[in-house]
Amino acid sequence: MGLGTRLRRIGALAAAIGLVLGLGTQAQASEREPTGPPQPNVVTALAYSMARPTVMPPHTNDWGCEPSAEHPNPVLLSNGTLVNSYADWAGLSGKLADAGYCVFSANLGGAKGSPVQTVAPVAETATQLAEFGDRVLAATGAEELDVVGHSQGGMNPRYWIKYLGGEEKIDRLIGLAPSNYGTDLFGLLTLVQRVPPLRELVGIPFPAFNDQETHSEFLADLNSGGDTVDGVDYTVIQTKYDEVVTPYSNAFLEPAPNVDNILLQDICPADKTDHLGITYDPIAARLVLNALDPADAQPPRCRFVPPVLS
Image 1 (cartoon, rainbow, N blue to C red):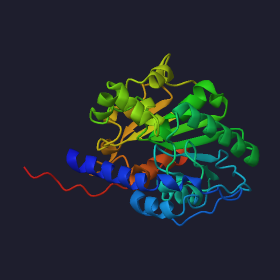
Image 2 (image 1 turned 180 degrees about the vertical axis):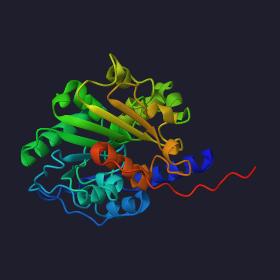
Image 3 (image 1 turned 120 degrees about the horizontal axis):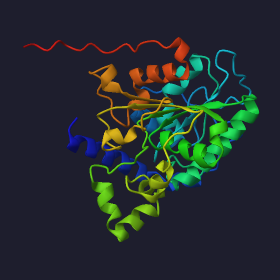
Image 4 (image 1 turned 30 degrees about the horizontal axis):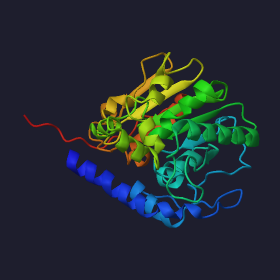
């Protein structure tokens, strides 16, 4: 996929989201929001959730779920900037539930009832995530939980870990294309930061954008003194075709005994998934399951790669 095609895809997504920003006045559903059907990709999931902004991913938020001895940690799904929980997780949530996990997710960092979520200042969204995580631990009786996050959702739990006591509550953090070291968005977002009126214009509706620029004060603080802590296992799963976290290597954490940085194409060279599609990628899903339960890890079934003819 060429740069122009990637940027057009981002633009189309942003335009679609812009059309539904006004839907944020709808009231939240009852204690357990309705769940929707599984989806094959983020496009169909986003379309479904636009008309049903409080719908949650399938098999999530069963507050009576009791973690099993095999999987004692409930799994908390943390979605990326702009997208809602259903759009990000309507594929993976069912796979996690089928594997025997208690799975939870929430729409945070956005207006209640809006399909546009995770746009508030990152620290604010992370604080809401920590509060939701406390609810999950209280309901399930678990001592710790595991977090699977996409994009900002794979980065902002690190704020929870560093500043909100998360190191005592999070056992594993698994990031799918996380914005750990931010993005320059092919130089565009960095350029915006250099023009104060543009920076403020972006920051009013979407503070999370400015927080995730590579050189932001938020990221400088988050990554100061080391980007990981002992006692938490970190896995990063990234694709070299990432069109949002650029350069794609900004997803990776500094090497450490408790860090596993995985490039999808090192596992399966033919995998062409991009940033928006990674939560629906079957190879990435297998790697998530492996990270959650290393004792039962299974090699991903890679797509056939035609031999190179000399």
